[in-house]
Image 1: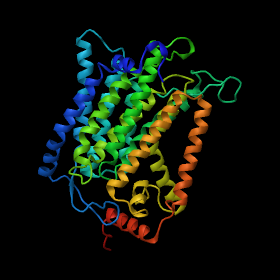
Image 2: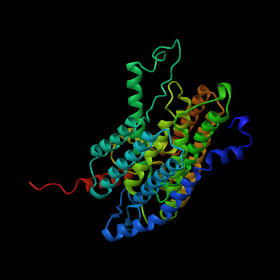
Image 3: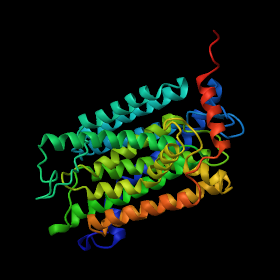
Length: 409
């Protein structure tokens, strides 16, 4: 995982983590202390998530605004680290990237918060997420990992090609929009999204640490230099701390929900880190590894989409098609047991993603393809892709409630 020139692993961790680990502790404490305050504010202002008989199955109204604590803890800890390192005479060379990351995070957070309070249209929500992604572009955090192979059609091109620029731009927004919506959809059980976020953040932290170690200590072909690995370490520490600090209040039985303000913001930050691993032209390997570390939200969303298509249901219509719904409804697992099972599954995705550090890119891609096929096959065998008449009726009731009563002629 680390070059031999760096010495024992503990020494490498100490060297690369010693400054940034304070970001984790700051975000953890801010989230722990801030969540009860925002819970009190949500109760005082009447910001509740109401249960229904179709999709939201919690037994009583739960206050929102937990995402405010997550966003505030992450933002304050990242900005504080940046300002303190500046004042200590150790300026970050990526000041523009830090500013873009924080500003884009604010846009993603506000987009989710407005949806929590006003229930905005999906199109408006996508515009807000795309704006956050555009701010990343302006700050220099761009997807550029186009795989260039000499002698291969469409792949034997340079970074200045218009075709490459178009592909990279499309991938950039696909990652941002895909990740923000995948984490938004994953937030369906008490403690699920916050716990999985912490696990994925640790995975990104380890991947960024390994790349930073090779850049610092590696020699010859093993020396890998990525512009944003140091920043990714700080961002991952901050997000892990904010998510873990929120988890005690969100684990079953939840006392507060993060809402779209939290899940959309979390997806944005995770997307930004995946793009950081794709910032070097021709080096798609690390992005593929990061994508698999983020595997659970991807497969959960993919499973729901496939299930809706197979059952001829609207793709954007909420229902109980997600993996966590199926574990509860079909296998009869409790909410707590389902969340724990998915924590383990997410950790396995992280381990698989980190195998990219030991495998060549083509072998890692084959491995990930096999794992994905096995995952879909198991879901099929367990009946997760079939929708019962009761599930269809519940989804129709939810849709009718969202549309409101029919207009009188």
